Image (cartoon, rainbow, N blue to C red; front, side, top):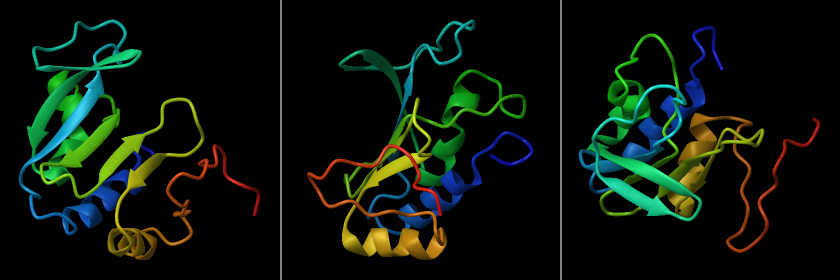
Length: 140
């Protein structure tokens, strides 16, 4: 997190991933309806997942980084990353972690993974499909 409480890696990841989809101008963000805790959830379509009901928002890939703040009208006062982001063509999916040390997870092809490695030096760990993902950073 930077001094404003934002996760700058998420902005860099979404900018990179926007170049690895045929639909960068139409993407989706899902945000847990209870993330603010005290403020009622805004009106939005619901996406029902096991254990969580998510609010569904649409827009260009890069702007969805601010979807929670825009939806709850807190832009500039608090930062919360969206929980899931994916483009309409489903070329990849980014999931922000809630309880783990890892900032976010991306399911994508090798070309997008290589682009993320270039955009986020020393910030990407690849895990083969089906292998358990590491939950915490290993000491360097």
